[in-house]
Image 1: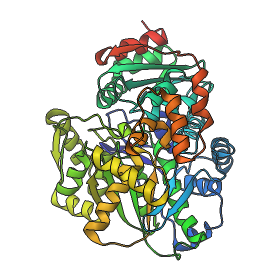
Image 2: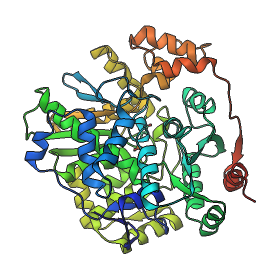
Image 3: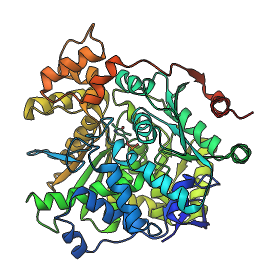
Length: 496
Ligand SMILES: *Cc1c(COP(=O)(O)O)cnc(C)c1O
């Protein structure tokens, strides 16, 4: 099986090449030339498998140039004993509300761990397979959670260095603390005076600059990406949608063959795109519900076909979704339209005018698979309170956006299809907002005081990886202008 670029179909590579490169030379994203299928019979046979085995099964479909042994090493290394649940994800059944798929039981308490625990294995295996003898420099732009999850995944991984850029005022206090105290000899972390889009655009630009690439090569280095532009980030996320379906069957919540809906709190469109791949593979998924916060560029796009980033950027209580340029949408548009010329044209329009519009046929295909709405901060807070009051269940701000939009979906459509809601972060990462939503007084409390208070209220165990931060020294306090990213990178790498 081969992968091609969304902006140039003639550029075809193996999965190992796609993962090692991260992004295609001309700025396009790698996608599978054909989406593999899971037959009903195969899907049924997965019902009794553990998470690790389902992961190996799904990965094998896409990584046809990997051996079984390589895949087994990747999935076992990533998932055996690194999550505080046996099967990576767990589910909370809130009657009437649906099934909350808790994806945040990994080392950094966000769903990003599911992909970023395995990406270093996939990447180092890919680099070896392709025969590259360069050190890989991972560049990451983060809206908060990717950065920490990538740092944990790549810390002290041989043959790699990792650099993370985050928006100075755009992450939660706990997210920042997690990153600036990061341990490891191959890591660096830097704040950008700008928002996430500035960081992501800067990283993408440096990535695709041929002169920069040459300079790195001259120094025995190459860039790759741990953002969801990298296929190796996206692929592991397909697994939990497949697993969730088989798990609901196993637990007797649905009958095999029944359809389900999936709700995803969305920013860069990576997580929901993974659900779309699961649907295209043959998992019985009816509607993909795309939940945004006040930065509702995707809501408008899915409802009108016009993508327009020329709008106010809001800093919200769900900072990991404060994004106006959703990279992975490019992959979806390719799959819906099937033309590299058109994708190139749309993205040239976006770069020039901040806007593009898709044709009627894409619009109608979007409407068939997706529902989109958004939840502002006030509604999100009310939703946290509602979940707590009704079910004694505490959710974080991102999950609350999803829950709130799911309520809107049900009110609008009356659809009673069983629904899985992706819960993307532990409430402990956003304690202040969650406590405020629950009408608790948080004045004067530091991050750890807030954690204790949230524990008293939620009765949920405090993740050790967060409580441990209190004694750790700050290693990275730097902050730079967004146009200085390249100089910063060259400085760290000692490139003149
Ligand atoms: C990254 C993130 C999201 C958004 O996911 P995308 O794949 O970027 O759409 C939602 N919630 C949390 C907690 C996140 O960290």
